[in-house]
Image 1 (cartoon, protein in one colour):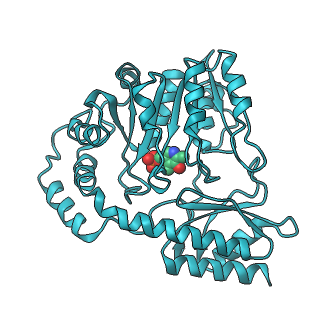
Image 2 (cartoon, rainbow, N blue to C red):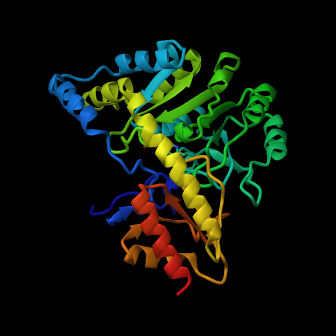
Image 3 (cartoon, rainbow, N blue to C red):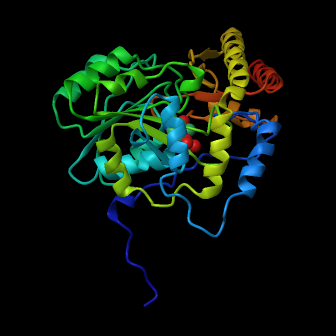
Length: 357
Ligand SMILES: *Cc1c(COP(=O)(O)O)cnc(C)c1O
């Protein structure tokens, strides 16, 4: 028979995740660190990779890395779990805490991967939308949590793509009033220098997600981790792929993490440039920029202009930003990652000339 039976029914109508990554001279679409790992550190990485056996399976849990990260965070090895990028751990969370008959609370607009993972694992999604200024509707969230049927939720801080922080007094209330597993996604916390980590000592229903992809210039290497209590992490271990964190990535990450202080200057520069970008965007006609604590800025174009056309014209000028103009809650919005001083200048000049055409 030349036919194939249908895939699982929850996949019907789903579009595979598409980061809309296109080649461009100035890449400001994916919130990467625009500067690669510094040359000196890369030389050390090369030495470490040379010592790595390719023929043997890697340490499945990457214990050396867990120890380094635990020590840096004042935790034990059992409170750290590594993943193939933060994305793998987000998927594991949906596998371990979601599933048929279970419920995920989402706070849109936010990282689209969360709802996607819920959908493909047959997890019901309850949306508690943010307010018009993208701040979390804290009362609505707490009220919904108090109903007691939410199995897990994710609070992104700073939020992607809106750039705002979740206040940890609010996260603390979430943890106090329910036994829902609350993930605080801190993929960008290095740019806000604000972490929920102190709450870990007090609450078993908290996990914190971090990644090497953004501040540490390693989006191409695929490493993320969660911090949480041992019992919660044991459940993640049951669903994770045993060898998802390969030996080469482990070797690279050991060197980068040991040298993480070297990234501080670059992070400072991004924070400075972020302010310049925000100010310049707000001075531009037809643009409203939302304040950001991260390494990107979301901005809305006045409805007299079509942001999708602006996106296209920027792309024709060699500049790739992220188009959210047709996304729910983000009508006519674009997001620009903070690049180098020159990249940001080039973006600002192009945008200004497009808008004043
Ligand atoms: C980038 C990002 C992640 C993790 O990305 P990885 O590259 O898979 O580590 C997690 N959450 C948010 C909100 C992100 O933007």
